[in-house]
Each structure stands twice: as structure tokens, then as C-alpha cells.
Length: 211
Image (cartoon, rainbow, N blue to C red; front, side, top):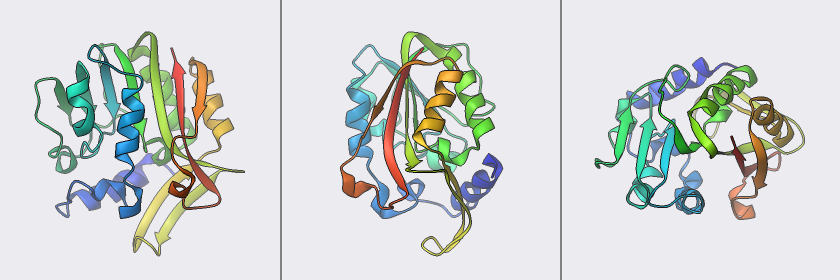
């Protein structure tokens, strides 16, 4: 499974005039209030954030007035049009695999993103974006992870009634990739109440690491 499969999925969603919650895939999966509070525990009015694959801004719209600046990188304008228009929010409609900037940030966030990339693609993202963190800056990767082994979804979903692609790697595998990319002081946080993890074979965690 490559990221192209997931881009095709979101392309088809984007062309159907989606509402701002469409990016959450299912109505049960909007935990952005918890996500926002978690991010703000690492941020203040001086914090600059690079948010990768920002979707419709469900998180950004809850935190933008509590931080200094957010650069939101979202490929699909049909989603990013919902992101708040504010002087400290910059929206860039680009593929996060191809986007480049010389700016350095206090915080880089990938929330519900890395499951749509295979291992090589994800490692390349980590290796690339570590260069955009300030010294002692942090990356937060929140995702579902395989509990005992990798869980790969590739094909028709009865729940969604369409083809869907995700690769939920184990915590160990994802942690090893972050460390190999150069991140340090990795902390694993069980970010949500147990009932938020709907499936026995995957579980939500946030991985917080420093440059």
C-alpha cells in the first residue's frame, strides 16, 4: 500500500463537496477536542506549529488563537477551505511528501496521518521534517497503531461502502522509525479514553519526540 492509494480515496471524497467533518471518515472518530487540548499542553502564545495534512482544520480552528503561528499543509483545497482565516494561520495546498520550507518550528504535528503512508514513505517524512524543528522542538504523531502486529486495510470497507487504505504499524515499529530518523526522548502517551479505540487489534497513541 502506497500513499497514492489513500490520495485517490481522499481525492474522490474531496470532489464530492465534503463538509468539514468528512475527513474524520466516520462520525465516531472526531476526537479533535482531546487532540487540541493535548497539543496545547506543549504550546503557548510563543509557539510556532507546522501541521501536516491539516484536513479541514478541526484541530487548528480550536487552537489558533492560543499560539503564535500555524502553517497548515493540506493537499486538498476542498478541505482546507474550512480552516480559519486568521493572520497567524498560513494555509499551503501541497502534498506533504513534496512540500519544503526553510522555516523552523517549535512543534510539528501529524494527527491521523501516518497510517496513509507505507514504512518507507513515513520514514522519509520523519527524516525530512526533523530539519524543520528548532533545537529541542517536538514532533507529535497521533495515530492508531497495531496492538500485536501491523494491521493493513486495503480494499473494500463494508462500513464505508468504498475502498479504503490504511497501514497501522505497531508502536515499536513507529518508535524505531522516529529514532532512526534522529528523534530523541520519545514518550508514548495513551491519549484517549479506552472506548475511543473501537477495534481490538488497534489502539490510539500519541508519540512525542524531540529533535
